[in-house]
Image (tube, rainbow, N blue to C red; front, top):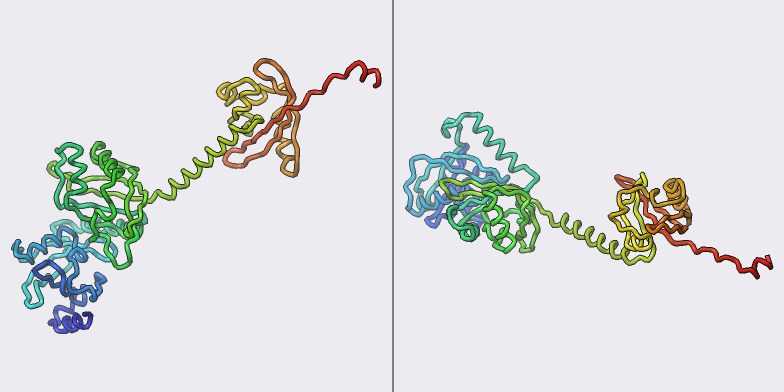
Length: 396
């Protein structure tokens, strides 16, 4: 196949393989059957894919639709008309094209870069378009656009709008390389020619996200969705949405996408770990406290509430010294934490319970470093000495 295509291009007139013209030939079904050398180089086209290459591999969706209609005889083009080419770097470049019948090869589409004068816009504006296209193409964040070939009537009921966003004919446009990487599109495949539903299925969570988009007047940030990679595996993502609405019809959605699966898994792991620690602390029979560097109570387990008769709401945020009869309690706890780093250590403190009773407790302290230094305290009541009997006193 590749040899036959090479022989075909060799048989082209010199003008077809020289200069800056980009030329491809399309058949009556609107498929690319041949390209000249310059177009193959510029667009990175593998001749092994010819004939039968999709027009969307070379052109934007709207330009591909136009050329398909011309090839089928459904549209008579002007002598020259604008088209947009999709580069291998996911950029769209404006071109001026002419359609020339060239049997038996097919319909030749001859193109050259479209100048700002031909576009009818200033050089500065064209430069801005080029810069924006390059910025999107080179961005590390996945950028995407869904173009509705069947625009969605925004005057319909909410459920009908949601249904049509998923069911109306649509296509990807101007999606960048980061988008292709995120969805693990194999090397050599163009993300923009893949079906929208392949990566953005009509799942319940995605329908709810689109419903939220409609309710927020088609502007939504940090919207969670479950998309599918190219291999069919699910991926939890977060989207920022914007929309283009013309004459009451939704014609385009665009935005950015981030993979938040790893972040959510980490959040869940931390939450599970916190729940486990909470269960352990709740089951511990001894009082456990957490205090700040300044001695403010930050946390207390149920055992601390029970034995000292005060709820967490009554003690949290207050200095631990308020509940101690022992002076310089905070200093003693800090010292115990410092000495405890080298071995077993602790300090005895007299705690005043809510009913006014006083008991001596053995405290052990562990220092936790972080943005704010904290101390974890565990306490165990010291056994009271029994009063000696008269006989013991007599023997003493």
